[in-house]
Length: 351
Image: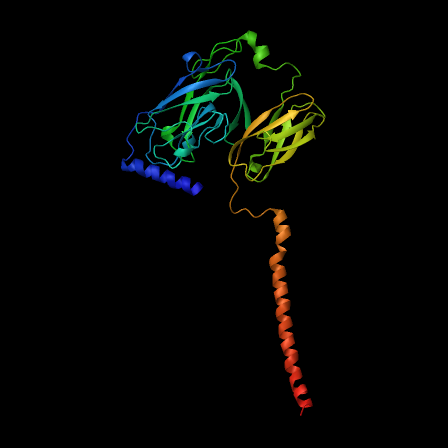
């Protein structure tokens, strides 16, 4: 996959140099959301209507663009390896939850996977994107879970090159505000939201002593067929917690938290789970708390050795066959040698 992506990057660069891709105006995204503005609702989810223009369109090129919602660092520019970003994670399937869209290049070998349409020859596209709420759990590029509150964080629509093809021309961040409402105050597009003083105690600051369970995983163990390690904090002491993957694909528990409400455990990721974004859900029996963590799973390397159980059960077979063969050969040679040595004696006795 890495080699394929590098080849595609080279092809894209070569086509640009050869002049096969027409020069385009700066890429930009217009957003229609709550109240028809570039805003999300203060309560509940929001469906944004997006229209892109000026994007680089590569006919027959591998990939296209990913469209996501989240936050970026000030120096964010993935093509140069600067800054970072966190986004609402979703599966890479066509029928995902709508938190992430894939817009393909025209005639791309990946066009069948697109759930956000196709970039036109002139660099325009349109799609819809769902934002789960004014606050949400996002995943950064390290696979870590981070909490985002668009009333205080700078949120917006993110576009980046898809399927491992880096393309600086198609990297954009379009700020989106929060519509005025009882749960918060709208922030200016491109700025940070500032809650009203009256709303601060109830909407942005948890009450004293309030527990807010959260979970984290070890990204290095998030591999198909491997055992995923996870931790959690914020549950009640000695509380029983059940952990499940993707709503029941795999599960473990009940596990009992420590004296400070902490928890550590492992869960087996099926080899068929598939690379992409998955959900780890934890449910506390006593508190009823149910934090969920979106995290990326990577594809297992093809050169990984078989699992230990198979090695223990089969590794001795080649040695055993070799030993048996050697014994049989020695036996045959010994038998012929004995016959050869006895032949003169037997012939002499009949003289």
